[in-house]
Amino acid sequence: MNKADLTEKLAERAGIPKVRAANYINIITEAIQEALVRDEKVTISDFGTFTVSKRREFTGHNPKNGQVMKVPARRIPVFRAGKGLKNALNPD
Image (tube, helix red, strand yellow):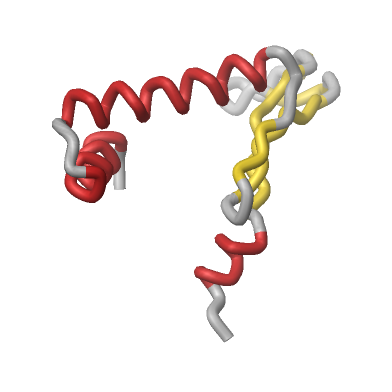
């Protein structure tokens, strides 16, 4: 499922035009992104939590020529599934 599929599903279930559904999806994803940029945690009950993890700098190798190179420290987004999502994927 991609963003277009999600937009269509939201429009169908909510009985709204696809343009409005697409705007709602954009608002949600932008709000999550803005919160993560500010290093805030975003929790959606029974679905999951979005957080930011920090990766330290490390020494790696360039796969093209084998040269040693420094890979800089980075911030990466992390998603951890909530109980509701886990239960939906693994029903008892």
